[in-house]
Length: 194
Image 1: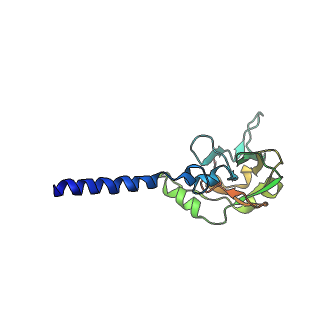
Image 2: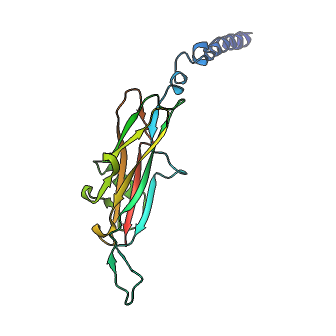
């Protein structure tokens, strides 16, 4: 009989606590994490697939179609487009200036180098060897979601056989109420010169 009473008491306590799982305010999005999901306005650098890296191998010299063949420095600039996207329920209600910059720390490069076994490892692309268009500012127009800037460098100004890395991060948004993505707020650009 005591066992039955204990079981009955335990069942009663369990049933009374299970009612705590039905939270009308949470389910109605009055508070909790659900309450901000639709209102979040997140700015990011979108990916294609699951990679956060953009890699390319570029020649230090080119061979023109002349006889005899002579090698010329690869002085034609290489331009890479960096997309910027507003992930939100609605398009931008105002023009947004999203500033991108080369990450000032080596933490992302060091972390990336730790994931690869090949050598040589990547080193930072010197700041004087590349430019970001428009001072790194991507302008998302009112009513829009997308913009871009370009990363430009000249292969002949770099050293052959060196593997360069440049983490480009979203460093600022000029309007309040916008969030820089925690996991898609940067891209790693990997440049190998041969």
